[in-house]
Image (cartoon, rainbow, N blue to C red; front, top):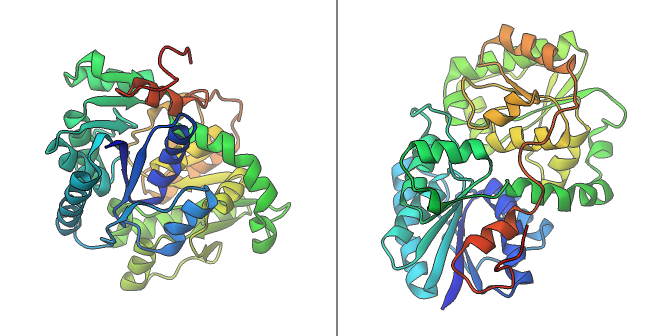
Length: 367
């Protein structure tokens, strides 16, 4: 019998579950990794296992891209088969992807208990597929690992019993503590892109509500262009496969100040982000990373499930409006970078293992 089965399928899940997987190795917890294959690009997938020094997954479903329903259904079938074979005591999922939804539902149909890492995040925008995924995962979980007290309050407000919730901090801090110096040592991305000692912004945009809407995507690019021209900075945009498909389908000419580049490996993206003057994004994980790295962030969305970043002054919402993107970028560039990290002390992985019903050396250890 396996102690823990990790279900993952995307870059953020690999990064944020890596500290928990490594903690399992340190404390002799038997585990299996089930990779759904939701990110089917090698750049967004296997390279992260190599860079993060993680073992090859025990199972790889290779589901790839399709409609939400088809993708989730294929994952559900495959994950159930893997869980029957691995027979874990606990299944652990992280975040809000279709892999999380499928993993949560599959686990709830077996004898295994379910743990949800990064529980309690809410954008309060139910038009986002991610919002539905995280709500469902939370409400079928036996162990809910809330990064912050604010996330815990959301869960309690939805009627989830307090004894199922543990405030752990966010495993992204664990990951950055380990990997930031490694990125400085190993990554040559700044020299490779010719941005050593220059002013530049980093942009990411891939969410369905942004890039699947022709007008909204064009507005975002127009706003980022204005901010770049006003502040005399080049923008580096690693383009997610979904966004690249939409750029081609919509016939969008990306403005000159925005340089599109291929997706980056984790260490390269971490090094690039840490050196940027500003990050413009629609990614929840990138909002967290920017906050922890001390880099001002503009979130090109109407809502965020990371309100802690705005409360400490590390992040501002701009929506997709070009004028607001420019104004918010200017505000963030002129503000202080001396905010407090709200996401914990880098020991989230140990707290997660400690809360699970496993016999480990962490039992009773104060963290």
